[in-house]
Length: 248
Image 1 (cartoon, rainbow, N blue to C red):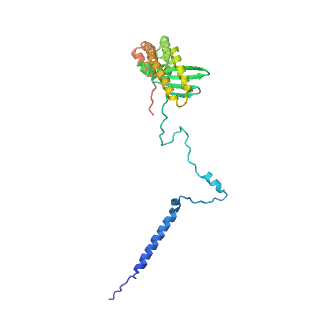
Image 2 (image 1 turned 60 degrees about the horizontal axis):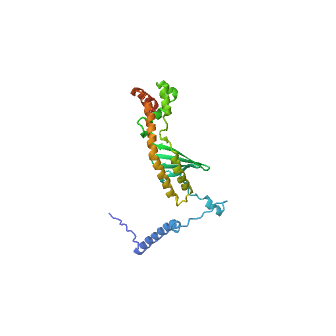
Image 3 (image 1 turned 180 degrees about the horizontal axis):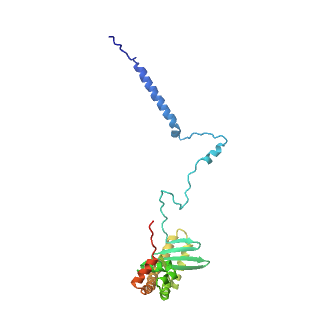
């Protein structure tokens, strides 16, 4: 039985190498052609019918302009460093002096100071509870809880809020602060830090005396109101004044 043998046609070595070289050259040229615009840094220009070339720039998307103080999602912006004296409104400033804050208001040539003690809940263990009863419960609700007219009178005498308590400044305090604040206002930007330090130092010295006096007054007011209640009646008032949380 005869067997037929097939022979593959031999390709000359020089021809095979030539074909491989041509393929490499063609592939390299194609890649260079695709990337030439990026490598050269020159974008291709396409014309749009009916649009003048000078209008192309206006049609390009513009980068978003960041508004000062505006929060960008995903970006944490560091708050500005706190200042000891800063503006809180028209012709109104606030001075931070440790446990006391001073609101300064200027009307014409007259400067007035209003002092507040911060975090007054530390004055008396029942201060926060007393303020809740005063601000959240109406007189008829208090009467329904058994609060007497005398107790209501004592409750009205309790001053302050959950965050601040008013402090009384002596005339000598005003005489000390007024010229120092005027010097701070008139100072140049370069001199303002030194003038601010002088104002705050004087305010802190005043605060050390006024905080103790305010604490004594607040403790007396809250204590006088609290001692008129039995523990059971106080707990009843507490349950009514504290906001109730409801399950979702």
